[in-house]
Length: 108
Image (cartoon, rainbow, N blue to C red; front, side):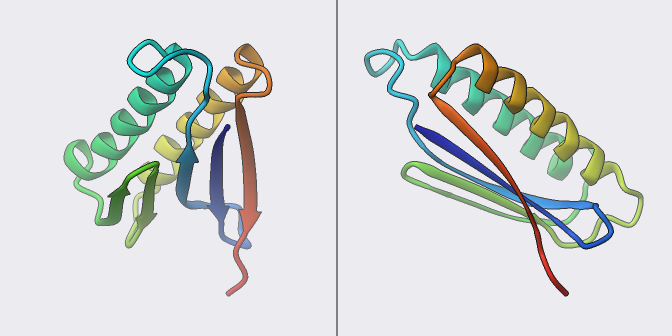
């Protein structure tokens, strides 16, 4: 299962995400569920860091990618993360039981 954990500030601004696991929907190289999630996550991360030039910590390891906004003064990063969160909710509905989306409120 793919676990997508998003983090919000107490004022509801999205701060980042950590996505782990595999969908197990199909054989390696043929898993459209994993490919859909991976593509969406890469686009969101690249939009934040390359298109909007928002400072973010990004980490990629085997079965895990994380992104944490360092400075999002204009709010564009929050909007991109909201787009990703929404997209993953729809994918979770389409690929029932393969993707779990959680949102956590971070305390100060």
